[in-house]
Image 1 (tube, rainbow, N blue to C red):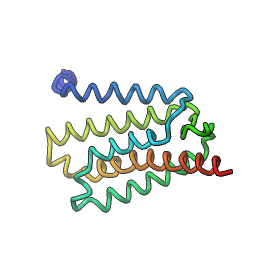
Image 2 (cartoon, rainbow, N blue to C red):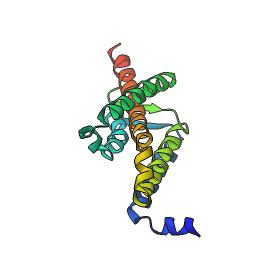
Image 3 (tube, one colour):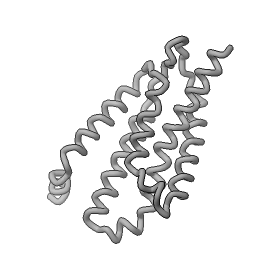
Image 4 (cartoon, rainbow, N blue to C red):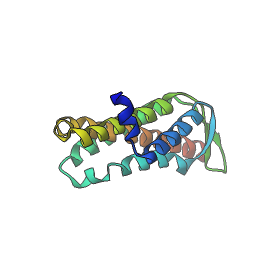
Length: 159
């Protein structure tokens, strides 16, 4: 019963965000042609949810998590073989479930820590470093991936 109370108390816009993330994640399970600048939308939105961390005492932890996530995303994207579409600044990325899974992890962690902050702020404060790390790793991963795909595109088109 308590679970339904929590769900019912969730603002409507949160469900709109979930639907949008599911839509993006499900689309990413199939090969898709992506305009290179669009690869930066997801990480920018993810980072915007925690922009205050850049102006807090936790900026170093957040920045380190972003850099680590970038390195991981860059290395993981190195294994992908996107098809370069010359002249359109687009690439065809092979489909996989990693984007869907990572977007759901991001949503669930944000939902959980938002709930914890609203209901038990002391406990939230104790574990806020976990949220900060997750909030940096995931957008960093998508930034690293986007940078690697751009690098592959521009390396291919120079040849």
